[in-house]
Image (tube, rainbow, N blue to C red; front, side, top):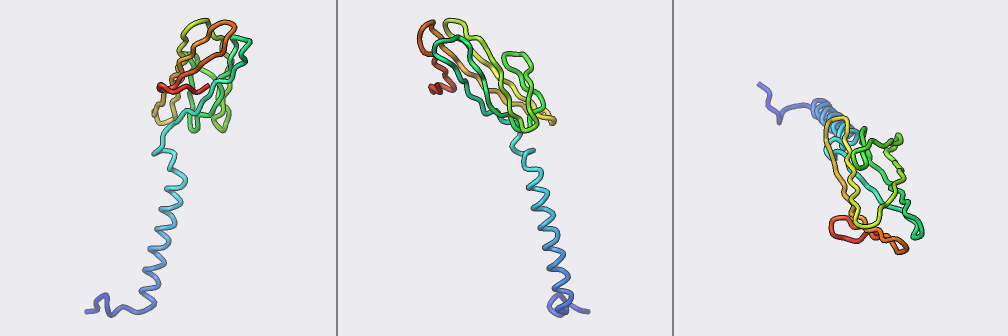
Length: 131
């Protein structure tokens, strides 16, 4: 009876190549499917002009198939980019964004915006001033 110690060089090379092949296939599969682990994410910012109540929400939501701004669906490019114009009302306003990917994973982003007529607009996200 032959043991592992008594195997030939040819056998060891064959086993090593099989292990290497499975490692390469596993690495490639992980690289292509890593977005499943991350899920959907929203990266957004608010661009505005101080003299106008009109603001533009821009950003990216990679892997999203559905994106809504204050409950209204907005369109996404192939790469996940979006741009939507909103009108700010005087006082405190809340902008809610929700994204969903094809596997049902969701993400939310919330902006609190203070707009005073004839003054600057201030946007908050998670207690940090972002504009």
